[in-house]
Image (tube, rainbow, N blue to C red):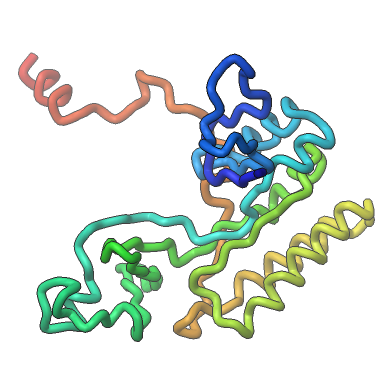
Length: 230
């Protein structure tokens, strides 16, 4: 039985046949989804290393998502929307209410509770691969995923059409493909969240960043204390 594996940092498309299969039923992985740790450049390098049709079939890239920025066992639903103290007497307000945490900049970050009453806070601003979509497609990637957590139903068709239009323009080698991507970005920036407020989007973890050299890193409190004492 083929399986899909989400968020693998170092997926190996050609497992060693001498090692035991990690799947108890002897199945294999049909698709891999790279983790948030990888930039677009690293995902493209992975696709090129796997090569051609294999990359197109076996790698699935998340091109739109709200990154989880905080996870805790403390339940804010129980704390602020209930007089209870645990799941036994809280009345499960998480099942009937939507909650956002508004930060000092006015951004509304969605809070979701799982079956274990753990809470995850999702970034208000969506991460979009539109600026690097051409690079991803050029690397042979064809399976793209869109993950929705805070988009109202009416916004979903608009969002899907924006990505579809941009991808088709790139794959058709249209001269105005760059304009199509720019137009799609402009549309997505205005899409509202569940509160009806546009939160914008950015490239997020897909952006390529130069690793900071050790000498340029900020000193720790201990290092600063030693420096002053000397």
